[in-house]
View (cartoon, rainbow over the protein chains, first blue to last red):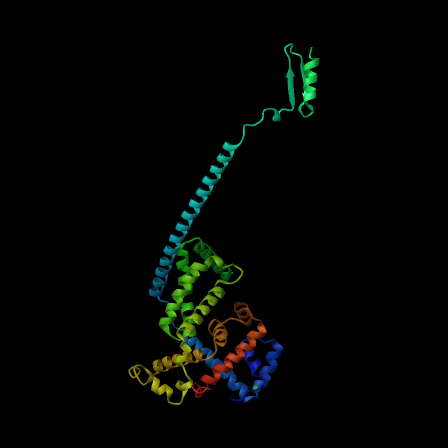
Length: 152
Length: 196
Ligand SMILES: [Zn+2]
């Protein structure tokens, strides 16, 4: 089979993928090249033959077959999704129970809270109801002793 | 304008199908079944297997629909799924081995069609024979050449669309189509010589 060097371009020409200038030069060449005329004719024949081969018609039976298979798959998927949801919910519930349990355990094991620690000031009083306000962080044993001694 | 409306309608169908609407999915099957079936038939060369592949393709479409993005055309996506499914099918059954160049020998066709064709009208025999020849020739060329050729000759895609669908450059499309045609020509030249 002869191969004229223009054949690559003929293929694109046949597909309408050339610029108008290229198209013109191809047409001028084909007018006097037997090989390219034959090639072009063959391209037409093969395209037509391929299109003629793809003539299977639409068949409702096949649609039904496809949809049945899809439903089957869908049921499988639905079953899996339901199962997955169930597992996920169980895991979440379990995690919540664990968190509550450990929080409760932590709270139960905690020592009673020191009442003074939350107070900004300590109040020291005596029988004659004279009251001294002293910032707590500054209170030392010495201060307490002093306060008691000087309250009269 | 009509094309835009159609695309919009198709997008609606796809998004409904993604949400599990079976009627929408059914509409997509009805729309594309024939095209997928014929493509599979040209790729595989056997009607029954093409039907099986068509079924498998749509089941895959249903399962993978949420991966489909609007950026590409739905048919391009469907086309790739179909071609990949066909290639798997061919690999599984090693169909290429069945064919040899022998059937294209001078008396090959006569031997092949001497049975069961005597009662059919001549044109019908001719059409059937031609379809069989094309089918077998397509099975004999490489799968890269086959898919590019089918996009061009059967799907009527332009080079840009083919490049986009196959993920190759336009230049590569151009030369691949040319080489595919040459390969096909070597096989079919003798059969069509009276017409050329
Ligand atoms: Zn030439």
